[in-house]
Image (cartoon, rainbow, N blue to C red):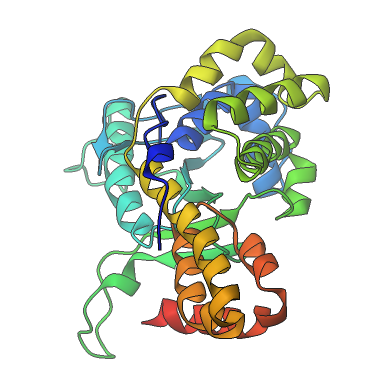
Length: 312
């Protein structure tokens, strides 16, 4: 299979692999928007943004990622994370973050661990907003205890941390999106960029076109008008070699499909085609829905095959 390698080296603009994570924090840095998101998730009706106290751990880095958003409101300690790739270790991340958050809280309130009175702690809520391109359920729960080595049925772990994963891709969790317009706008903006990339645009053009569309249709318009350059720079700032690999895989898919037609479409897709499509989905180049569109007549077979693959 021949690849046009000259096209690969056209990627001269630096690309930030974590652009969605940075943008998510940027959009919800305003207390009013963050409080709206909290109300939408918890079914509450807090009206005063000043009741929300942001305590994000700006200088705490774990696995090369800063804590996204953490805050106190009412009697709850909230940790919000954004993920563009599926990560089964979020409960462990949460454990590390919450340990630091509670230590700072106890110190700030002047409590003493050696005292004879139980220290009242705000209730922990841990939400992970997922918008990767691999298919996932509307809501998933991950627990730290699932990672522990088995020690027998009668033994209970001394630690637990529970992460609720919400799929915030465009079209998912509609009720939540309707309650928090800012989250819906964010999901729509990211989807516009992806749609443009799927049309063959380079990232810079895809971002520019998405910004133009959103400004024209009132999507994140206030944020984009004030910080259009800042948003653009977030999306184009940092180079990642994954861009080349993604391009190679995409071109490999097109060549594989063409070759599959020539050598026998049925065999080509059933064997190599499934592997290529799975790789593209897992690398976030195409969504599961787009993968199924490419092989409509074998959609059910591919889904079953992909589910078995994930179990291995």
